[in-house]
Amino acid sequence: MRFFLRRKAALLILLGAIAILATFLAKVSPRPTVIDQIPKQGPVSGMFPGTSSTSLSAGASHRAIMDQTLLEGLAPLMNPPPGVKLPAPVVTAHDWQGSQCGVSRQSFVIFRDSDSWKELWDHAMAPYESRLGPSPEVDFSKDMVIGVFGGERSFPGARIEIVSVANRSNAQGEKYVVVRYRDIEGGRSHLAAHFAVHPFHLKKVPAFPGRPVLLKAP
Image (cartoon, rainbow, N blue to C red; front, side, top):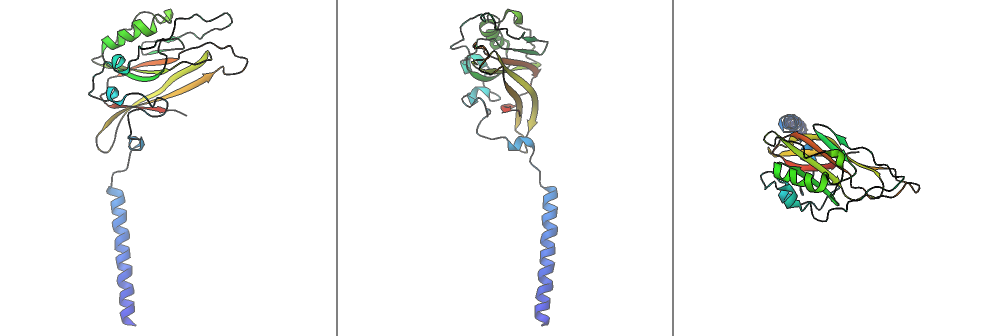
């Protein structure tokens, strides 16, 4: 009888020691951050699965337009028909957003040099929307420009909106630029006039060398 009691007491002591050790390890182990939960299959997820990961990776050549062939197959220049009124573009010191540009497919690009930026503006922005004005000055030694292009849409109310840009790193020290956007299908009804638009949002933010990740906001 005493033998069994001793075994039971030893077992209880062992279980208690295991519980204490598990509690200690839970406290000292690093907890995953939000970025750890982002899929690792590439820098872009959600809306633009075909974007090249090589040209978007930190340290790669940032001739973003040429790498992404962003200027291939530009949309035709067209004026809206009578009865279709497009919203005025947003033009600020840090944001350029509108419904008319020449980029005809869904794309996610980070511009880090003035040549790529000016090439985009002169070929795919200014000719399509005169209210955007000439190519904005950007000091790429301090800043970069994030671009999200929605591709061709059938309804004039469609919009793309970058809602947040955040710099993150995971437990391994990898850096990320996490861009969240909204895809807004405004004016989509059987009564709405059909006219092809190409919504976009370009945002200037402080330069950061992390790997880009695109996520769709709720």
